[in-house]
Image (cartoon, rainbow, N blue to C red; front, side):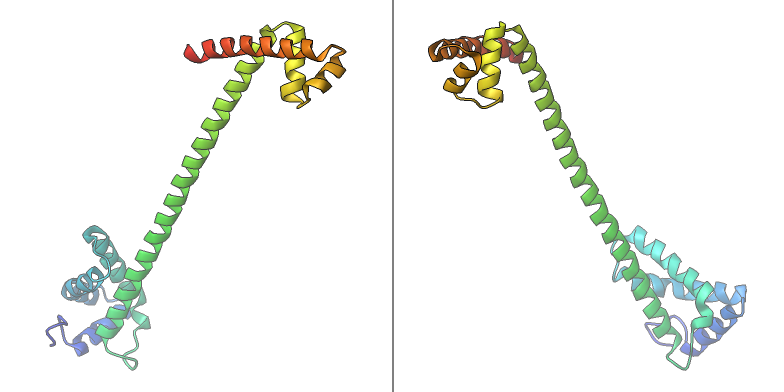
Amino acid sequence: MSGLNPMSSARARDLLIGIAGGDRTAFDIFAREVTPFVHARVSRIIWDQAAAEDVTQVVMLKVWTGANRFNSGRGNAFAWLTTMCRNTAIDHCRVEQRHQRISDAAKESAEVLDDNVLDETLAAAERREVRIALASLNSSQRDAIQLAYFEGLTYVEVAERLGEPEGTVKARIRRGMIQLSRLLGETHVN
């Protein structure tokens, strides 16, 4: 018996042959003697002890269901078991990493979505406030401001469109903007 292995390779092989044939007693003996060995191998890869214990149980289940795949001609039982421990632990780590990446991406998406929703909500509220404030202006001020600021026309173009002198249009826009500033300033204070 090797210091690393809890039982001789020949005994492990014989128990695996029994397990492959469905011998529950052979499995109980095998599991009792090799579980600490399996846990030690798994713990070299998975440091979280609760996860290492779970993976150890998965390895032992794989022994029960897959003992018929053990081929003593390809290596000894402990080499087969060590490979199974390593592969199962690495598979577990890959799944955990994938879950973490998905979780991180979901959190990032939620934060971006939350930021976008907040920005859109604030912008909509501001647009609503501006529409309400614009509606409170007299029609000549409102029309001049809408043409200048929402349609992007120059003072000259606004004056031409409204059929008014440019100075009158400038004065209406200026008075309307002062009134809007007061109205929106009051809205933001409340």
